[in-house]
Length: 94
Image (cartoon, rainbow, N blue to C red; front, side, top):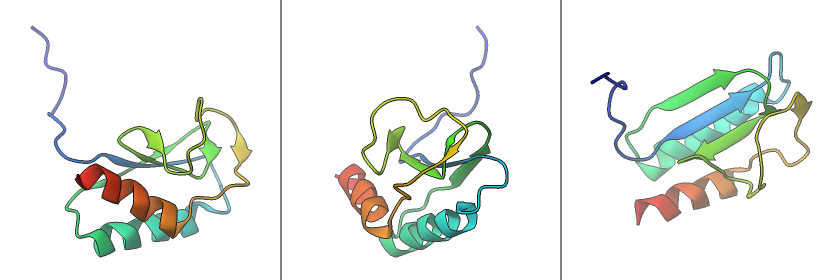
């Protein structure tokens, strides 16, 4: 049997950006602040590639509620907000 990597427990938080995204640093700051404020002990996973940028996913769900694929090489008009990130984190805490 092949190993699939480490087991992931808890909430998975990801920041997806495209190369040279002008909003990446602001989104990184928002999500880091929200993680600290919520008291969650989780690591932020960052991915750079062909994404609608910036996108913040909590357990694979876009915090802005945008359905569909996160793929694409474009700046988002609905940049993730502190309120949306905190709401997404709170909904996962149960």
